[in-house]
Length: 289
Image (cartoon, rainbow, N blue to C red):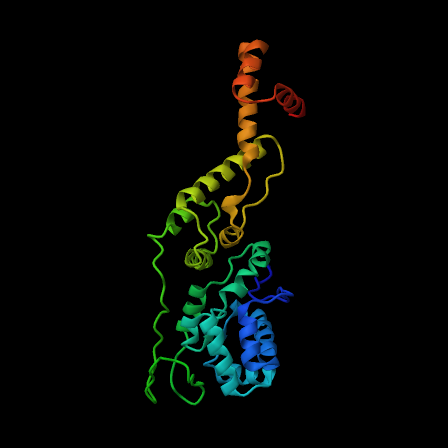
């Protein structure tokens, strides 16, 4: 019987340099803010699908005990983290803690497991399955803009989702050969778009086609062909900038060899000269091939 596939991790990256978020919460809350952030990441890593539902009384009390902070302090810190974008602001309005950046850093773990990375949409679907009432077991969020009436169900509204059909994502998804973790890829795409770090979609799709061609040539030559990265990982790594110059070089060399074999050495040397090729390099390439 196959082992169940895990949606938790035993470790996560802890970088030695920190960004504005850490300086902000440490400046506002001192060591309590620093310690809380990393204890929160530990909880996210150990929790199935990497989200924390603070509407659950037991989960909330466990967080307070683990962090050794009062409920007000925890709410204040989480409100700052939501404003900084370190946790998802839409979901935090519903007292659900989710961090895109944290999950993105785990993408290679899930790639090795050959399963999709949990996404914000997955988390929302799981939370929608839970009843939401204002009874004694639900913890109130003083920062929330959601209006609740006592004793009545407070249905969750889906968090705002930016349409992606018109911003190039669909063209990327159609071109990219790995169809895994679409929700996470959308989140990454929107983040990079907002930061103005995405080039024109034509550049991205052209790079993907060049990389497909490169892998096809490597396979034809009997060389090792690396696996395609998870779509979100490829985007974060700016995969469109990967060097595929070896493809165009090999194509030129192949054409020179074709001329040599069909038209003879004289035409071969003329072809090399007119195309800026070193005939010696082409001959060496022939020997290696």
